[in-house]
Length: 101
Image (cartoon, rainbow, N blue to C red; front, side, top):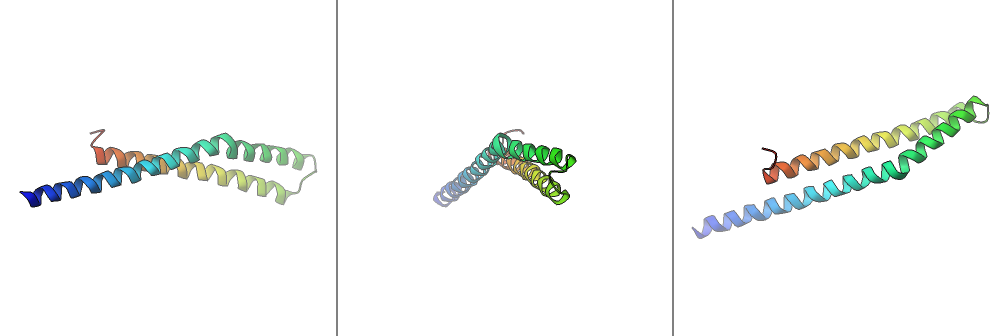
């Protein structure tokens, strides 16, 4: 009986550690999404729009336009990755806690 209790406590400790790790990943992804939405994406979109307009007026080169577009697309992909990480962590928490069943 004592061995079973010790095994049970070990499993509880492992699950608690996994929940903490998933919660940390969830928080980090949430914070990253917030930062991207608040600053990075608007700045990249504004820069792209400015350079696109300048390119049409002959003030910027085509490589400048491509660089701005790459930057904007990289920020968008980073947001997609952060959203995916958020949902993976959320699903892991639900699995570990038995919620959503």
